[in-house]
Image 1: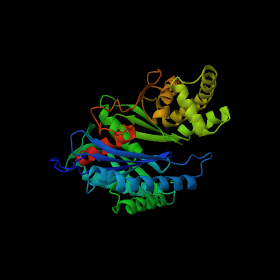
Image 2: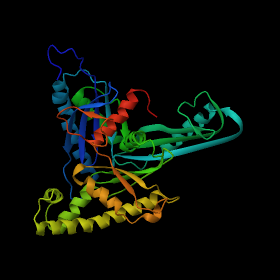
Image 3: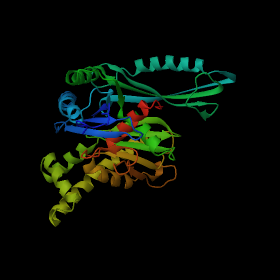
Image 4: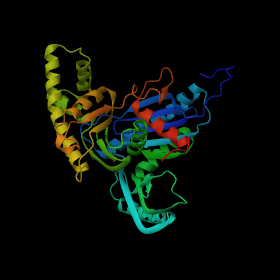
Amino acid sequence: MFGIGSSKTPPQPTLIFDIGSGSVGAALVDCAPKCPTILWTLRQELPFQEKIVFDRLFKGMLGALSVVAQSAAREGLPKLGVHPLKDIVAVFASPWYISQTVVLKKEEKEPIAVAGHFNEVKQFLLEKEKAMQGGTPGGTAVLLEQNIIHTALNGYPTAKPHGKRARTMETAVFVSMLGKDVDTEVRNAIERALHRSLSSAHSFALVSFAAIRDLFQTEEDFLLLDIGAEVADMGLVRKGVLLETGSFPKGRNFVLRSVAETLKTIPAEAAGRIELYRAGKSDTVESKRIAAALAEVGGEWQKAFGEGLQALGKDSLLPRTVFITADADLSEWFRVAVLGSQVRELTLSGEPFTAVLISPEQLKGHVAFQGGVTPDPFFALEALFVHKAVQSLIV
């Protein structure tokens, strides 16, 4: 790419690891230009499990991580003529972390310096970390991230509150925790392959929230739905603040297992038959069988989705707009399932959801993919998040 005689300076990219429940991916991203450019990617699927056992899932994740990390070191970086890396960033999806948004408010009769409020926030968060320690899979919990995602003084949002005075103060902090064993083994696998330590780690909940909020600035209130292989994660955003998160254990593999059971086959074959059906390449009899199987599992999935929404919006009605991230093979199917969900009584307007699928086409102009690189919406959102951090504009 940058051969002998080239006058262009090779980029100093960031290496992003996308660690999910169905695959682990790696992407090299050039964050120097105004629009982040994804230069190289690789994704390794985890072994499919008929029944989820955490230890086996963990082992499979570490195996996939080792493959993509070693490929990045031996193929990705040499191919681009890149050395050294700027940063190495890991982004974890469910079920590897737990998270919670903490909103702290303070009101005084007269304006006071906000420094005291933030000291109270720090103390409260130390206590919150201890309270969350028992809920993570993969060992005792360690802090993954602790990000202030919103601050308002006297009712007005501000990005630079320090040194100011106010009568009312409100701060929202997103806190996530990771199992210590997961944290240790992931860091060790990356360091073995690249001979460098992990620079930072984040949850996909925070990454997708921050990126989507910036992409769709006219939307203050919305829902996030990230459909992973084993778990579907939800987030409730109001006035630009990620207030609640939740999940239900029915991701992409739930659909494949259910269809496979109906068709009396294995999930891998079911996935292939669904792909042919959705491409219009199945005969009439096969199409009817696949359609009936998908309709049956769709009803089950919509029921779980509705129950998850009820828990998420237990104290108030929900926004109509849902931003969806999902693997390409079933992303449109999930979008249609969301549109058909009977949850009108849960929305603010009493109308059906507006479902927006985050796709590479939608991200054009915001993220660029080097020629020959397969567009991937997960890497795109992560690249936007990292690019903003590099530009020192992260919330």
